[in-house]
Amino acid sequence: MAEFSLTRTTHPTSPAVRQAALADPGFGRHYVDHMVVIDYVEGDGWQDPRILPMSDWSLHPAAAVLHYGQEIFEGLKAYRRDDDSIWLFRPDRNAARFVNSARRLGMAELPEDVFVEAVERIVALERDWVPAGENEQSLYIRPFMIASEALLGVREAKSYRFSVICTPVGPYYSEPVKLWITPNYTRAAIGGTGEAKCGGNYAASLVATEEAYANGCGQVLWTDGAEHKWVEECGTMNVMFVTADGELLTPSLGSILPGVTRDSILKLADAHGLKAVERPISVDEVLDGVESGQITEVFACGTAAVVTPIVGFNSPQRGVAVVGDGQPGPKTEEIRRHLVDIQFGRAEDTFGWTRKVC
Ligand SMILES: *Cc1c(COP(=O)(O)O)cnc(C)c1O
Image (cartoon, rainbow, N blue to C red):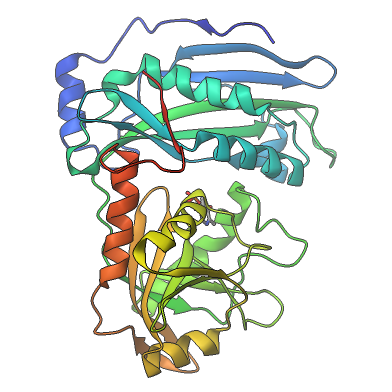
């Protein structure tokens, strides 16, 4: 593949406007001035890697993504440290997962080194858009890929577009939430796309989130598609349980999204006096454990919010159940702090997870 080319915007955001945006970035409210675009054509491969001014795209109305949903994405962040250097957290894991998602959706596979290079280039170019790390602000990076071939017949498309866009994000202190154990919807079935980070999974989840709101909860606890018996994950995050006998329990991989945050927290468990255990966990085990005090803390984890305390459950069968005293637990807060401190370079990175961009 050729070298990346750069076409600079003729209308860069002024420092004053950018500073105002960074003062209160929200999530996805402001976008950086440029984006990465790389196209793929079957037979010719990946071509013309380029950084362009952020702009609308034109797409044939028959583009396969618009009809059959071949779309995958990733999410990671760039962190500004106290010495003003900019770092990524385990971008190699996102690159590898992106390949797996592409494979599952029958899409072209972007080489992992190209993925990481694309992310590093856009972050380095837009480094002024990475907020100061105070209050845990960061630059959220969204790599994604769509099937761009004009195609109404149903088959794997032959042309794709990969892109990376970025948005500064605020301190994402996530409010503690209760989870709705939906009897009506599932996120993933055996043989389905649960392990892939694809837009279709999200499209199918939105109606269940509305159901959760209507039942006084902030998110859905997804259970398995066959029996609604086994816990899978929560909203768009993985779920973890702290037990009275010192385990950090989480559902095994299979039909859940293999989160980078999940994997990192499992590896940090030891440092917090917890034994990481991955195994099937039933809804009854969770609700019984919450009732008896065997489960002392519950939290969800993912890149965007890092860790979200789960303080209760609601379900048609068993009604409302409160975790502990209904407040975020101490291990939840400790683990969250540890992970964020590694990301911002304030705690030792014993696993070699962080990667300097510039
Ligand atoms: C992205 C995602 C996660 C979290 O993955 P991270 O790599 O930790 O950000 C969990 N569940 C779903 C469904 C996701 O899409």
